[in-house]
Image 1 (cartoon, helix red, strand yellow):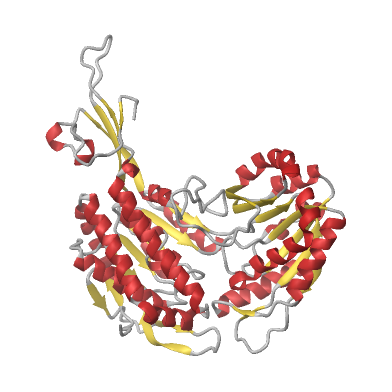
Image 2 (tube, rainbow, N blue to C red):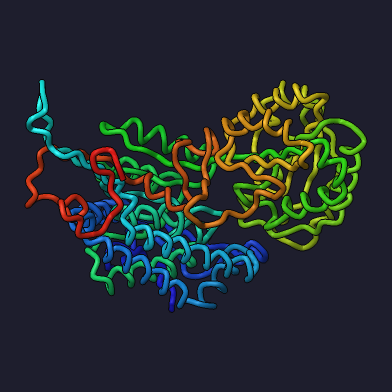
Length: 526
């Protein structure tokens, strides 16, 4: 497939705005600018994409669930069929290794196929029916029926660190399309060619599946201009975003300032605390040190779930862990970061953290060598009292940098957990002898994190029904939702109750004979 450097608006390939501004991908390993250049979308492109999405919504939301499922499966098949063309372009734009990108492509297609299964089951509609009770005294009851309906067109912002799984087709796009919402994607400027390839796969799937034009569009733009224009458009009814706290909060302000405020589902920052409980640490200090550094440095630490904070009680076992982890960090080779901007932010974040009072450097990785955008791993430590008293130590440094927090007591560990902001994950390493302590800490972890792991590492997110990838602010802007797992579809739905609806008007999901074979709650029973 030849890259054209065009927006994809409905079924059309559009050359773009007329002001001459463009963006181009840059190979982070070499600094080479990659062709083609992509014109920036202007108001005309936003207007066209939003109007097509609005028009498509009226038809798309009423399609049989099996038809929407077939569309998602066709998209997955098309992305799979891109093969090396997609992998090699993504490698050039991101510097990520082949194995990582092929795994990410599998995860993206897995999300699309998972939501196809969700649609075919229909359980996500959460149908609830109460039969009429005309003879009830003192007041008769009309028939009542409730189901979930789609919100409307959705704007999705591609993520920098996952060019496939959280960008054009994965994550919020897959969930919104499954819910019955047309999607307009703002491609991430760091990987426009990868975005175009995936976007064309989605566009072709929409055509071949006879979806209404406008069910999917892909636009390019730099900075906040395009993003703000999409969020301000009155036809957009929800937003999915993965990125910086500054970017997410800017979109939230815009969405709330609209005459009709809309939800913004923003994933913004997380340092993902890891608790090393005493008995497990005593028995496994060295092994924990090696495993932690392997997780910390995976992908140059460019994961939303990277373990950026270690909590443990002071003592000889902790010192053994620190020594082993420090040795592993010193042996860690620099890795390529995704973009010059991410590299610059990492360097600045590390420098600010090192300069904080009470923070000491445990170890840093090998010299950066020849890479244009290298990540040199850093491991730091501080005391619990210094951590609690300094909000700057709580900030995410996006990359392979972590802070060890030494606690004098269990009570102090609890104070640290209480002081933390919301997190995507929290991890507990424990033995059976630590269960009583873990049980004591668990309520605090539940208040702070969306996913709690035991005797594992947070990097890596399974695509399945039970996964939660979300958490309290600022890990996400709405702690009630997830961006991964089948429950992600709930982001783009709302309940509607139908009172005394004539049977002839009822959708198949609510008809008395239940032609879809749904699991429904009827008169309080399933």
